[in-house]
Image (cartoon, rainbow, N blue to C red; front, side, top):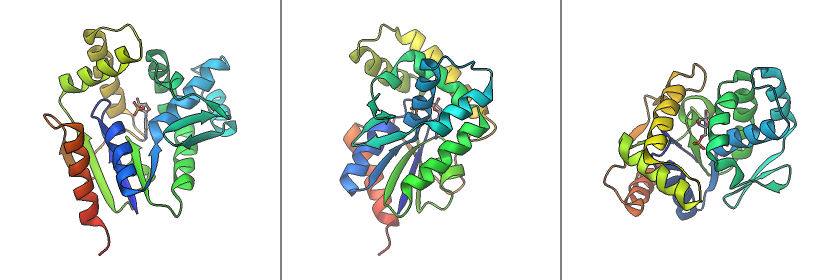
Length: 217
Ligand code: DC
């Protein structure tokens, strides 16, 4: 069974999807981490961000391995490195490149093949897994999302203000929504869940009920 969870940054989908996968005993696919890993490799290899072919070559040659909620890039654990403000901004170049998108969507389908999976991203219901049995679109108000991201970044020692987080988030929302291929769009058969005012446990419980209602008898 494939469960897709799409939504904007800070909607809480990452932690919710992770916990949901644990509860269900499903594999978890953090597709944002794959885009981020390519951006990190691009930075380390000093790519020209305007040259699409350089990034595409990197995406093709990399080995991205997702295991136990950790992300490995050619065998190196990059779980924390891919979450910095700088890599978050650079990831735009990977997400905007139709060729790298195709390579990563292909990799996502291979990783999910024959397995029960909770997959999280922007285009999972619309592009990667249109046949998914359960599609969820998770969202939350702008301020709530920015507060979550602010807490997350400051806990990891980054020096940011709530205002800068909110401004970056608005820009990223716009980029994600306007992206022609793989942009953030709700599939017609997705179920909308707004996480405003819900605790993390309540979100996971809501999602678990939804998934179980879609499980074959
Ligand atoms: O979910 P995240 O913040 O880790 O995602 C990082 C960036 O990657 C985000 O700005 C959009 C992009 N992304 C995408 O285009 N498609 C996906 N399936 C997942 C992420």
